[in-house]
Length: 226
Image (cartoon, rainbow, N blue to C red; front, side, top):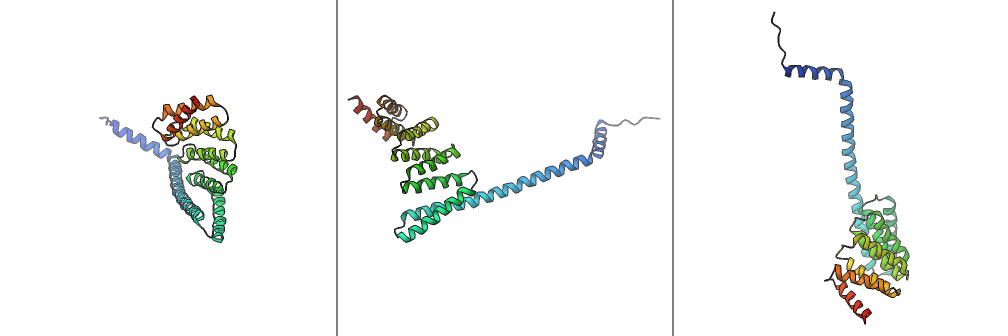
């Protein structure tokens, strides 16, 4: 009798078949789990997109309402717009996830409080923007705004702290850093810290030689040297 030789391919197929037969319940369970996870992820993605779109629309309306409030001349209408604006801000800050919508809500709140000359509370609102997301394009602007608010509130130490934080985080920001270096120098000069003021002005000259704020820094260095 001649023994029939089984090919390696056939043997492999048999082994796989036997494995699937013995473990089919486990495999089916695993497949179900994967399907459920994928479905959940797909559902969450759709939900997240919906939430993002919803809050995007709300922040656009808030931005528009703020502009309308600022430009309204009629006192009665302006009062009603202000009431609506504050209500919208409160609702957004309570419900919005940590996203651009929340950052923008705090930023608009800071602007509103600045318009009201509520310097300390405005500074806190701007600080929240920075604290929530340091990578946002709003964060460096918010820090500068917070510093200016503290200066208006005659809180020099707090303003200086904001400028120092800005330089530690965004000293390469060509748009705002020259303003910050000059403002820091002017603040230090006003506080009688001339040597530190000179350093700030010089950093502006070295890092941003072509900025208009640097020209002002050069002027102050000339005046101090005289």
